[in-house]
Amino acid sequence: MLDILICIVPKINPDSPTVGPAVLKAHLMQAGFSCEVVDFNVKLFNELKLKGRENHFYANDLIFKKHPINIDNRIKHSPEFSEFYNDFEYVFLNWITLIKEKNPKYLGLSLLSHQSLNVAVKISQLVREHLPDMKIVWGGAAAGTKYIGPRYKNLNILDHYISGDGEESIIELLKGNLSYSGIDTIQPNQVSSMDNVLIPNYDDIDWGEYEDKLYETTGNVVYITGSRGCVKRCNFCDVYKIWPQYQYRSGTSIAKEIIELKQKYNRKTFKFTDSLINGSMKAFNDLLSELIEYRKTDTDFCWHSQWIIRAKNKNPEKDIEHFRLIKESGCEFLEIGLESINEHIRYHMGKKITNEDVWWCLEILTKFEIPHVLLMITGYPTETEEDHQNTLKFIQQLHDMGWHKYTMLSFNNILGMFDDSDIYNTFKDDPNLVSYTDGFIWQYKDNDFETRSRRFEEVNDLRLKLDFPKRWGWLKDIKTIAHKELVKREQFIKQQEYIKRMH
Image 1: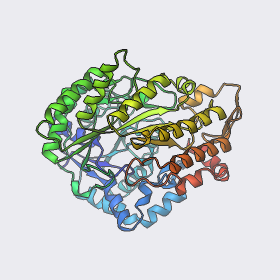
Image 2: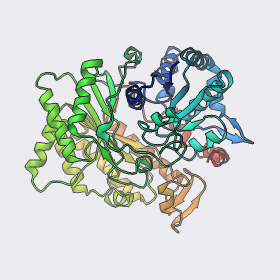
Image 3: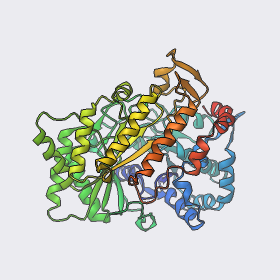
């Protein structure tokens, strides 16, 4: 009898399986437990693709975003998800048949984000109906949040949930040690050392199932984790709640994993899950050196990662040399959380880098032809009209300098300031917060919903007009149907009561 079947729950990008389940499989097998991994995410994507409805994986639609609500201890799915389920019920029932055939003692559901919640609930409900004796455990970044793990355990949708790192907790759970750190608590467990984390085991994965055209260049994507947590604590981000302590692996161990996955599974694009790959400069530099050495015999691979801008070195030649090593190591793409070109906004967020550092960094990235995307936020509470005009000037300036060839722009569509989030707690007692209805409908000074919507439209209109490159081949025009729905105030007013019940 199989000890545990771990399932990757939609929705996430269908380019590769998430790394967590494969890492857990490696640790479980080392501990003497039997484990298999199945990717329901890619199976759903491929079925939707056959029906011409794969846009659900790319659009910011409401099927996955609207969470179930609890009415008198009964779970009610949103109309959007219910209609979706009716269309694809056969897919879910096929999954139940597969689970029944595997007959595991435990069914593990891996929820990468809140967009996995609807499907996880539905799978669990079906398992309760068809396989009532099977134990269900949820894990992943979303499972340990107070609105998910405890709530759905109390509703008997799941038996256990794991918060934080699961490598040790899942083994203790299968041993029956339910008092172990991270089990059935929102206090996350963290491994003692990232260098003790095993190389993921992808032996159950059929790589032919994955969409290989998301990237315009290399393809053959696989995810890799070099660190967990972040060295910063920005007030719009909750990464520190999942991993309170920033931990990282040695550059040598990361390079070893890249080489093994390349040789064993023929993966060629290594996409880091890290919030930042350069949190430890020593580990990062060691990784660069190891990869450059390996590329002397094999150049058929590349890597992508999130990365932070650091202060400019007093020795410019040392900085330039560092960027050269990044390029030579096979870096194909960097995601940079710039958030705003307005320095005072970044400082208020907790991201304390100067504009001088920003411009220096962009200049050298362009010099070495390293493509990068700047992740930006429109609608931060303290943003003024002058700040917005500075953002428009920044976009125009990047284009006029010719840097847009390597600089992509991604604007977060209107900052959500939800109850109990850090950013809400930052502003909730500020007298300049004129009104607050929910995470989207609020006004700080003259920064109201309509103003934020207009600014979001204007930055993206200019981005498209100037023909900035898109991040990936599948990325559609920023003005998707979902966004058009988003900027309709009436829709949010109608959803207010729903959102209040959800939280």
